[in-house]
Length: 59
Picture 1 (spheres, one colour):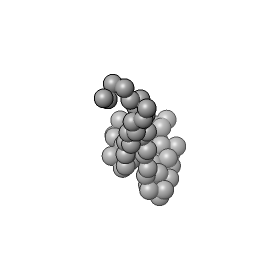
Picture 2: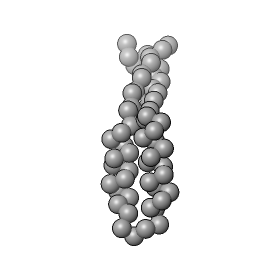
Picture 3: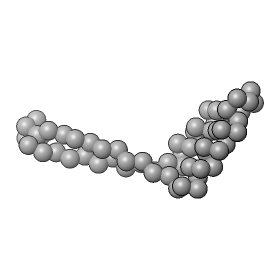
Picture 4: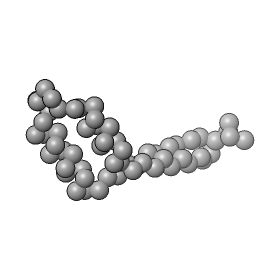
């Protein structure tokens, strides 16, 4: 029966506003510096992000 249905999925992500502001400021202050750990920055940012995937099936 699943073959007869259409599927739509949504991914919603969220982060505390204060955390988001801190990450943005950290990036703005350091992105041009050679010792800035860009990979670490984005890893921490990803870990601080909540994600939820919602899937709907319909005819």
